[in-house]
Image (cartoon, rainbow, N blue to C red; front, side, top):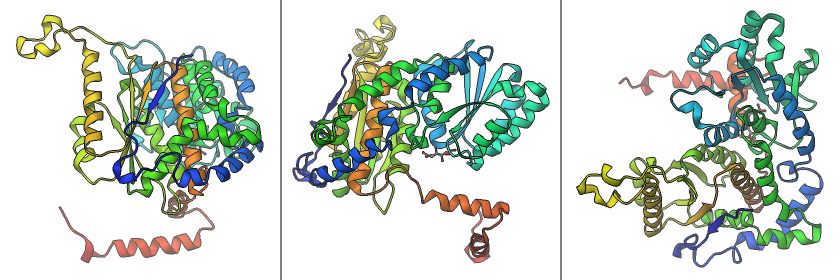
Length: 456
Ligand code: PA5
């Protein structure tokens, strides 16, 4: 099995005063975290790690994909964790759609309220060759449900009774409006297992149905993830030692130490071009899981080399509040050799390949970050196939959970974001939200005061 590396050489700066995985708040909480982790595993509350759903999914997925065999397009309706994992996998392993003359299958991910784009898709996609996949764990997310209502009507108008054959619902096994729809309309559906909230669900039907549609190797993704989880799935008495030896624990402890020493932002700097969307996936995972009780660090996705020419100045010489996860691979394609395509003045390129430039710039930027005092963990992937991606995703999810346990917060809920949803519902006239209605009126009348309005 290909092994990848975390390099900790520059992870702890002088400012962190000799902190390490062994001497930190995390270390002092290891016993407590191990107990709570073992209890969660035992109770089935960490399914992204134990994958009790795997056998069933591997049976059902091929059947659903077979139903969709004649489709060239898939339109995925979902948001947050119901979309970001699928997009990361799509961009990493099915890049043809973004390239000229694509003749293969295409995945369109509708994860915003964007009337313009939805209209464009519905007016141009050949609906007879389009599968619509609605992904919502809760089955009650307004953005996703609103898109579904519009798309369903269009499918019904265009395809008549056949509309159901083009639709798959991915949702909770028992609860929610989408599950009720699947039941009432006898529609094809796949379950999102219990305790597998959006941002931890990429390796369930949520991410693997769209991935499978694009021909991405779901088994390799799951195998990669399982190989990272396996060392932690030990007897209760061995969990403490297993955690202490696991890279996810070291990442969690490090992240906690970063915030304790004023590093309030965590850059996810990817120098694997096709994996650039892993940054957005990681950001949601990290932010929604750990931004609780005034704690956590702000994830900042960045793309190498592109962002060297945009935000890197701020990373290097802006506020000294940033740590960095720096992702590279020495197994990337080298691309074309320059040879005499490079003029004499650029002779440094002549004996190089295009890909050598990426590696040189990655090294230069990593060193520069180190010189400017940015604590940095270097993740070097020795392969960039699905197995490797499964490993990285599992590592990130586990580190996130463990960071949350060290912080003493619940890393799988997101209570603060509920407020905005309730207020939007009140604005739309949903019943039973009298207090929110009152607050909205006060807020909008204050905001309407001309004394505070400035034209430009
Ligand atoms: O990670 C999460 O739990 C959230 O971002 C959800 O994925 C997002 O809110 C969508 O929820 P649902 O899948 O229930 O529609």
